[in-house]
Structure formats: C-alpha cells, structure tokens
Image (cartoon, rainbow, N blue to C red):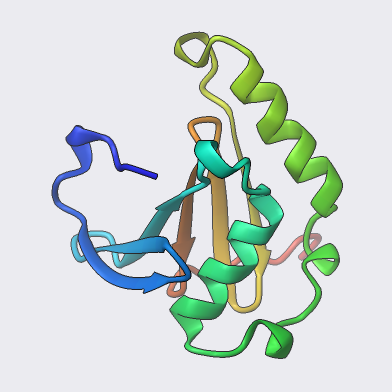
Length: 122
C-alpha cells in the first residue's frame, strides 16, 4: 500500500495492522489506501481508518451501513479498479462517525474529522 509520489507532504501517523495512515497538516485530513496486494475491502479499510483517526475501537463506531451500503462501496471500488484508472476519476463521499469520508477510484481513503456535513432538506 504505497502512497503516490505526488503526495510526499503526508506524514505517517499510525500503522494499525499494516495499514499506514498519513496526516496532511495543510488540509487537516487523514489518508490511507486500500491494499491491492491483499484485496482489502474498502468498507473494512474505512472502518479501521476512522477508528484509528478517532482513537476508538472499531466496535465503538456506528455501523458503516448507517452511512453507506458496504457491499455497494466494495463493488464500486472493485469496478473502478477493473477499469483503466487513468480514465476514471471517481469518488464517493459520505458522513461516518462524526467524520466525512471520501473513497477515490485510486483506492485512496480520505478522512476529514473536522468537516461539517451540510444538513439535507434545511
């Protein structure tokens, strides 16, 4: 799970079970990547990353399915990875456990614990 060279401004802050999490001080966001080599599920990586960022056990988080359908998230990322990534600039953003999470077609997961989710229908 190597990070792209163009993201050298990221500082490693946690290595939970082999999944390194990086901090971007300029943006106040945390970054990690789904591991292609182990075929890690995006939904699993999201839960582990958010728990690490919030410094809680994964069991203490709300269910991911309250924010996004985990199987659909996994399928979407799988679809993006089977496509020519150079032609795909996809991402999905959703609130989860007081954070805003964005999963990119590259497998990058960005967790923003400071961003406020706009209210819908107000």
